[in-house]
Image (cartoon, rainbow over all chains, first blue to last red; front, top):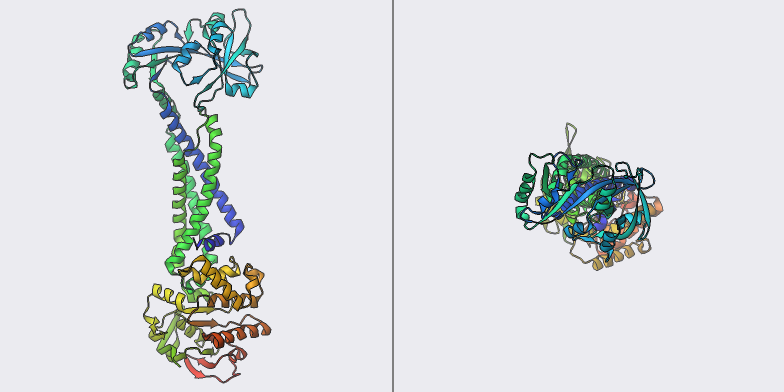
Length: 383
Length: 231
């Protein structure tokens, strides 16, 4: 600790250069934190996904509807405890740019399948009584300023009503949220029965089924049995547990870990040259000063440690700032990718600081090596 | 009097470019404890080389250098660094203060290598700055001090660890006459009142006049220099 003022003062010998270098390092570590944070966050989300809930969708693709008649057959599969369904409703409010993520479902089935959904007392009963009722997410209510009792006209670019109207008006009966706050509550949920009776086509179909099973260890066998029920039919299914489904979706994007590591690797490699150059210049300018330290009894290794300490302080402080900013920004980023509430894991911050230390040590090695070879007599004589 | 510094048959040469330059040839010198010795001589005469050898900044090619009973020519680089920290205070022509540190932090530098606590270091720094009359400038950086004040800070730094020997290389070479006098008076005071042994290299006969003994170095050999002798 007693050397800290000496190290700190050395760092600020050229303020502008140090500030610019620190900014570069900080920006690099914001990138490090954000990119590694996203991959770590996705891993967290995958691990949090249920493996006791199955998703059953068309084998062709998600836009191919499945008959509602599948419901009873899926419910009869051994190991299945309950089944719900969901129909995608592409809707907007007033203008097409105000897209609303709306879905039609059997509300009581849905809440039984997803106990993490928090619905106010009486809202489910109200939904059962009110055909054109709606439950909306807390985030959506906050964003739009909607409240219980409001009647909201939605328009769909897909679904027209039987009377030829494009407008669907719903009364808000309750505001739901997800218990852990990690999934954004931004959907507009309506009664499937009302929606199905009112739409002009696609009647008697749903976009997706959800099934709760008794044993996650048997999810693969149960999924196989469900898909087997509809094999070689006009409406073949593809069943996966939530965790495998999400993992598969992310894999479709590509090997994210590879991309992230490649980008961060390139950034860190560039950073090595930047910090290395700063340290080299800093030491070159201070050869006589370092010679004075040696004159007063600082050994060569002590001077090397001072230079290493300076590099560690430079990179450590800047990386700390960068990772701190990334941690501040991370919840918004996760919210934007549909995983609200996730913070940058401490493991990423720890890894970042470790990487900063490695960058500091590698970039300080050449100048540190140079200080070892300082001849006091020559340096003091300005040779 | 006892010889604090004893130099016997010391040889030193440097390689400059492709040439080997013989600087000292079989030089002998004793510096008594409590002595204030001025080394004079023209540029290239070998006086700074001799000073560097006495201060343990350089090693002889041949010969013996004993300071306070220790053969410093036989010490390794690491041992020599420790020895310098304990036994020698250096004062340079251009002060060589660390520009980013305040006066008190500069003075503290030699104490960082000791086991003194922060409080003890602070007390010693304060005492050294008091001694050179700069206690009120403790928080100033070198750029905020005059040349004479900077040299006083350098003297405080040289004294703060209570070294056996003070080694001064042209301590007044960068100062005006009035400031030079005050710095030299300070060195003389340290020599007389605190018994510090001082070896000083100077071109200035007036500066040498403050020393108790003057030697003339020329072509690597030593001779007595009279008071007021030209460099």
